[in-house]
Length: 296
Length: 301
Image (cartoon, rainbow over all chains, first blue to last red):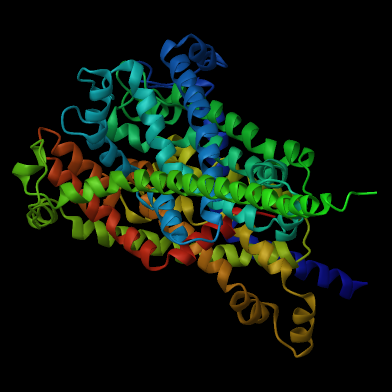
């Protein structure tokens, strides 16, 4: 009995000891900052009120009245709607194309995937150049189509589209990788059986490939949606959220509020909104949808 | 009764039938071939479109300044831009810092994640399941979202503007723990027991059996981790404000801002190339492993 207890104690100590280093860093840089954000979001602290004042949910109420926040939130949702389905669809097509055995397949994979290896900040530079009026490749193309010079990044109507286009270029290849992995797990004899029964290529994609890659689609969709709320580097280089906040996104607005406006209370409450948002999106993967999708 | 005279006709018909089928088949196969050519054309067209931006930047980086802003095509090329940029900002220092941060983060991550993954996979301790759920939170809410409060934590620790400060939030990776736990769990329990009978300690078993057998997962994680930290920008930007602590990405951003004045695109392209080149070259050399590791790391549980 006593030996059992000491064994148990030793095992528990060993387990906790192994987890402890990770737990320490997670506490310092994930749990504590999260709780701290919640705490600070209940206080008003900015340049005008250097001493924090308890305001309850005042900051959240102010967020709802802040036209910039509403605009930025809307922008982010539009950004997700604009980029996620497009990159997922393209990624699926790319994977279909790169999955088939043929010459040049490796090269195609390479071409689709390489944007992912370039730092976002470098991508921003590249596309800023491509969009620069008069010199940039795409700027020239756009001006030629519109038959007048266009500043794609300087016009509120076009800036989001231009940034979405860039994002799809950067991310589609990354999602392609997951589809490739998913497609390779589909048994080959399914396709052979379909071919023997006279099912055409398109029909077998529709009836075999798409349903059997559904788990991949779900996984990639969650990754893509959360990503679209985390993207921020490119704004620093390309637009600073402008013109007139037309391209501003949540995380960049938090950054701006923290380090340029020094408004701690508002930054904290926006961080909390962001945390809740991300938790909701990712828990769809972990708890909800995952069970509704048929795995075979 | 069939008229014998009809026989040749019948035979002719019989002969014609397969011929028609054949023709139909061949038209079907030629239709298929056309579709395939079309499909390949579109696919490679897209691939070409995807390469275009980078080709454009490489071209501009090697183009003499005068021709970069001209509208015509020029065949001239030069290394001047690269040399000019390399001396224009301490990119050597930035490169060193980036290497240091990436390897430092990775080294610590490998240790912390190995320990935690083993505990979650093979040690039954109180509170394990709850703790495991808690670890999930970091995957859902990664440190990049918490810039605002992490900055304050770092400030309280007095670690602003240090390389350690850039690395610290990433020393524990839940993602790595999950990945590795999965791999540890797939190893047969008998291995463990056999080694224990031989008198090996658990830490011994972990380092001599579990770690070597999970090498592919370690490689996958290393590639994903390094490429993430090599490319990371906002956090290093916030934490550092002196040149000796800046990383490549931050250095590039500062450089691009400072040369925004006019048509110095050849310089910015050269700088962009310098910053992207190391990872790109690594990617080209080890593309199979890189793509494979991104695949591995995506298939979770």
